Image 1 (cartoon, rainbow, N blue to C red):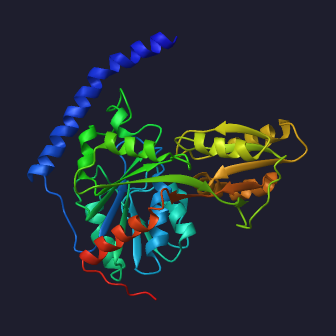
Image 2: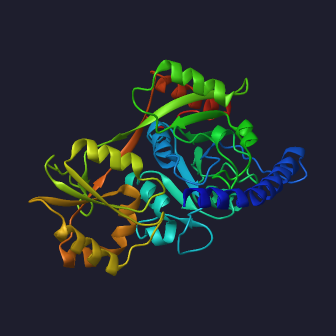
Image 3: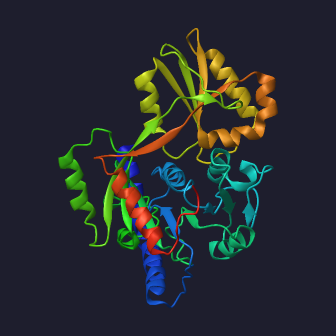
Length: 360
């Protein structure tokens, strides 16, 4: 079976070469100015990746929001992947994950003091955003690394420790959205999901493998999971180590969260769903049944923040079933004491773009 899968993967290689060629031509047209990329006077920071999902991009965007929101008037702009709406949307008190997409809705719920908007055509969405929110000082572009019609002032490329872009291939043979040389557009490269105790020697080896250009910096981050909270009330909850957990998870790569939970709780069972999946009432009933069938005296349903904003769409049914769900928040931390270096790198870019602090 393994050999058959390897053979099937080899059959995909010509398609990968063809797709990679198309993306190479497209990028060369942008680099040559044949295709026009629009830039804006306002500082724009793009956070993206070369691969198809799973690099931990969202907590890095949230890190930037926390870093900047008390000093500048911040807005985020996303495409709103898999949302059930079209066109430009600015989040308000009536917004849902169906309208915005799960990641933008997560930003809106966690950071209500910033502007969150979505739009497939970012070059059109930015003027609309600035028209509605002219006080905006910094725009964070979520998942915009391949969106070449906008030229951000600062480009952050996130690549995963266990599968860096240097060891990957273009889809469908691999998971890259474009060839590896796309990394040259980055202002800085962040190796995400590193083990907290990453040795210095391995750090140096990864830096040599990435081979950053003279203008690029390389940073390393790990995931940190905080205290769970009740999904509907937001109240922190304490889950005993002896509890049995049913992890309901619809994200690209749940392995780090599974490993974290297994390190802290006796029994962890994964109920997986596709990435960005919209749950149904039948799914809730399945969760309820599976929870009842699990062993142990104390049992909990846990999920991610990204899943929680989609599960919120079914709040009435959750309450009918009496299904209480604990949400496990995640943040990132910079390794090797380089957090301040990264922060100052961002501040220097914003200052160089002519934006000064207006918040106190």
